[in-house]
Length: 144
Image (tube, rainbow, N blue to C red; front, top):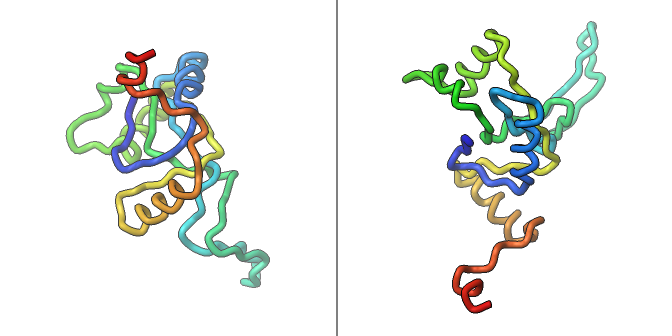
C-alpha cells in the first residue's frame, strides 16, 4: 500500500485490494470521480465561440488520482531516488506494459496539505458520518 499522508477519503479499501488481486495488477491507482476541478472549463468551437462553460466542475469521465495505491513489490525497482510515483514511475510502468489498473470511487478525496483544503476536510468531517462503523476500542473489547 502507498497512501499519501496528506489525503483524507472514505472508501472501501478492502474492495480495492480484492480488485487489485483479481486483476493480477502490478499497480492499482485509486481514482475519484467526485473531485471538482479548481478552475472553470470551456469547450470552444472552431470559430472561437464558447459552446460550454462550467465553473469548478466535477468531470467524472476524467477521474482524479487520490494518492492511494495498491502495489506489488516488483514496482520497487522503478522507485529510484529522485523519481516521483505519479510523474515518473506510473508512465514507466505503462511503457513497460505492466498491468496498471484504476479503481474508481464515487467519494471525494481531500488533499489536506493546504490550509484551504484542510478547512474543506474539517467541514466535510463535521457534517458527515463515516460509511463504516469504527471498531470498538481495545478496552471495550476486553470488557466484553
